[in-house]
Image 1 (cartoon, rainbow, N blue to C red):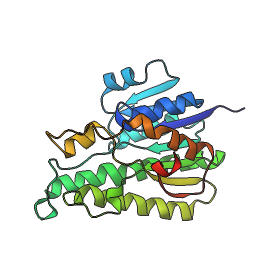
Image 2 (cartoon, helix red, strand yellow; image 1 turned 120 degrees about the vertical axis):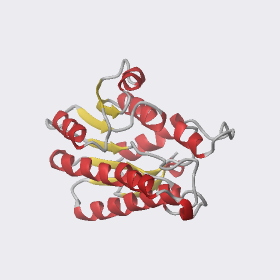
Image 3 (tube, helix red, strand yellow; image 1 turned 45 degrees about the vertical axis):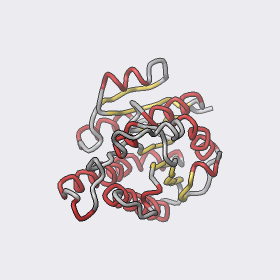
Length: 223
């Protein structure tokens, strides 16, 4: 069987780290990125992974990822992103520079990386998995900036699915998880009641392995 390869962004911690481990266990050879080189190397130690540290909003870094995947790719996971301004401000007070930066990280960068990798994904009939949030579809107070970026990512994903019928395009909501990003949204609060990222990995791997139709998925419903 031809070796399967996946590129996953934001793989040094949280859901990205857990999913990278799950994909490796499923037989994927990985290309993985994160901003912190030491944390990335530690997170993926022992896995069949090429680690490339950098910021996904940096075009030079994205080009390096694309070159590394040029010999073939089956799956792109756009997981890296930012919460935006924190503590979460109301939209009336949202700093616009922070909002622009959030759109750059959560919408423009994943779309740019997808554009760069579409040629190799088409060859193998591959897939794009964009990690989203229920904040994209629910009006939670304080989540307007982050939610707006995820809503934009979801619409871009839906249009990409319509335009690229030879590949799968999924936008997946993993639910609230016990991650550093989620803690940043609730400074000083106890979020230990949220499940660990590893708990949703089987649902994500199921989505990928069964090549379910392109669309939006709540991962809890796949478990």
